[in-house]
Length: 322
Image (tube, rainbow, N blue to C red; front, side):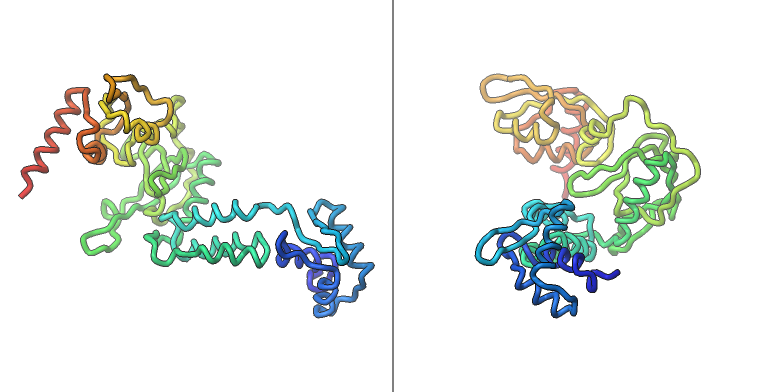
């Protein structure tokens, strides 16, 4: 039976969508709405229905006065929690503008109409840099399904050419991949796992995966000592190269930067009054070197020598660019 003709369900829907702590409603107002919906009722039946809802676990709050005021108190999400989720959706580049608006609209239905306005007023996704891949929801779901069922996946992978056109890597090659987990890093979504053609564990940007499908072939087992969190620290800013244990000498003001990047358990020790040493395991890519450059001498590579040499060679090559 539709809630539009069932008095109890109609009242519950009314409370959920049109009442909150700042906008309670009275029995008189409920009766007016029931009359408009052509549902027979009186003050006694409405009061009984409100009690039935409360007795069955719904947090129907009554502010007693000359006219009692009612509203739904405890909801699945509180308004501050939903505002935080809306902010996260808006800030996520891998969620397209269209999907962001759909998600925020769904989130807004978890509060009253009055509170929904507060969520919608935060909407500013139109001018943000967003993914144009509308299929990312389904790709993420497919990858989770493959992980849970221990199956391989197959897909094509694309990049962009100089004309900003999508082009498939290796002429549309189909990658055979055993996914181990997904990771959100630097506002991009990645899947990590074993790639057959690379013969090692690598990562792919989820929003650049095309035509994914789950294979009937069991996934290649994840190594017992593999840890995704540790992998994310090693593959610095998601650019892969040779991995080294690197010692950095940093000015004391950069301690927060080191902890933010590598975690609170990063190995450090004082190096005089104004500096400290940090020992990290990283992919020594150009992205890593660029990060070191960005601190203008407040961070230096101390060891190993081969990484120092690579860093100096890169610096000289930049200096010699015409």
